[in-house]
Image 1 (tube, rainbow, N blue to C red):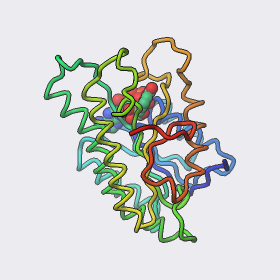
Image 2: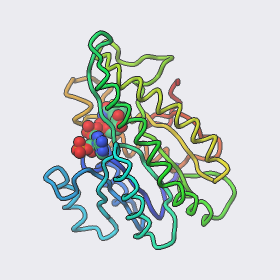
Image 3: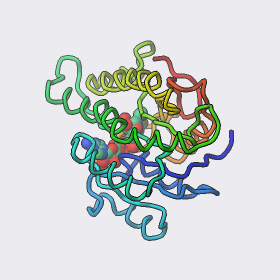
Length: 259
Ligand code: NDP
């Protein structure tokens, strides 16, 4: 697998966990992107301190305010990214922001179902719609006919927990709203791959592994991976994706995950 070469990337939920890992790795590439847009809810707040430190050292890092459940915030983010890009397109949109609520089948509520679905499923839908013109522009501006992530792509951060065929870690937590939201995100990814192929945009869903982040929790398990291992793996896989991979669900090692 080769090294990822992209001109511009946007990562949502970029202030901690896997999103921050993506930003760090992208900035550290031998040929880093010209623009890394790191979207987070509160760019000036304490929770974005690490991003602010990185931005002070990397002029190609731009922190963008974004609350993925608010359409006005999504529109403003797309407009701001468009202004920075000055007429060129966005190559890679990584819909990473997500939330997890642990509730059992019996205890699940309407409020949690709605909030988690709004964040994990509707957010990526609206983000992709808002950034579509910039993604199309990137695809049009790249030579060659095939699909690739260096041309134009949407990567949706899903989870094995959304797999219907192989229900993952049920004994660890039922997490109803989370599982349903990620199963729906997988379907969204498939639909996006069908709808956006003609625009030259590759779409794929990823399972990042069971990663040591706030969301990943503190349970010791030999299958758990660090943010670095997960992100390095995903970037490797992302760099190698082509036409045949659009509409697929892959893990951080590039292995196909059952829907
Ligand atoms: P974290 O909980 O560590 O980080 C979640 C990120 O999403 C934070 O930056 C958070 O921002 C942001 N976020 C949450 N809600 C919103 C919102 N409404 N608007 C904007 N940003 C928001 O999670 P991880 O880094 O572990 O997970 C990243 C992705 O990977 C998620 O989609 C998750 O479902 C997926 N995943 C993770 C696994 C794991 O083991 N960790 C396993 C499988 C999938 P803030 O700081 O403001 O809350």
